[in-house]
Length: 416
Image (tube, rainbow, N blue to C red):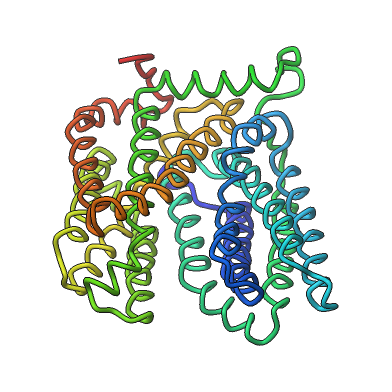
């Protein structure tokens, strides 16, 4: 197993994912700029963020069912083609002066809805593309490509292209989706969750969603990780929602300094993705998760108590490394423990839980800061991180994690 390598199929899947992340990132930057150029109403501008998050709550679970019902590769190609057409219409309307904010919102909603199903299908397809022993490396490469393209390159490139012409970031995004469709189409093989002869009689979408939920709930490691990510996303998004105020009011940073804080986190994420599989193999998934919980608590404590911008930058860098490592461990554990026929639904369920935490956190940050002071969201985040560390520490013991990594995996306890 250790001699197996990532082959050309994975290379094409990685390139498609990275190109899509670059294009999506540029459109994400350009969309609020386009809206802000036409209105100074904060509500209208903020709707862009809502349009980005709402599809995750509406379509994550149905998207997982779809990814388990059809060939995942073909589904990804169809989604990319639809997104190319939608963005081409938007870019063309902008060039001719016929676009408006409603059309932009409609296209963003469609594109983000497709992204959910695309991601569920991609994650479900990965275990059939790469050797089981290379899941950590594959997930690290995918995370690193997304961090580099979306977190580091898309922002400045999208802003620059928007200044040249408003339509260019959206046209480029259409081009990246077109290339993604071609690359995914070139991944040889069939990628159905089960064969046509193995599929049970047609069931309702609700029944299939419930089956995915039940499987996740019955796996102690996966259940705990999903709940952790939902809770920690809630407090993290709450913290990030008011970070701009913390940076300017407490740290004395200008807009460039504020942006550099996110750069610190992205650089950490890229480093974690690059060396993650080797680091996880060296220290083990157990301590990767446990140390990550401490890093999460430490970030909130630094944000709450420190006024040193350098310390905050270091804490965000460490958090970026931790986030990449957690992504590698959780994705790989889920792919190892989940049967092929359930990969789409279980992956989509975890995306739904994570997105729910993000949506709630975006509202929580402003409410808590407004009621109790600017540092209050960070103190809440610290308390939550310490509490979940204490209550879940023993879940990730070496024996349980080793059973998950066994080949074939040992049966996990249904409930505990």
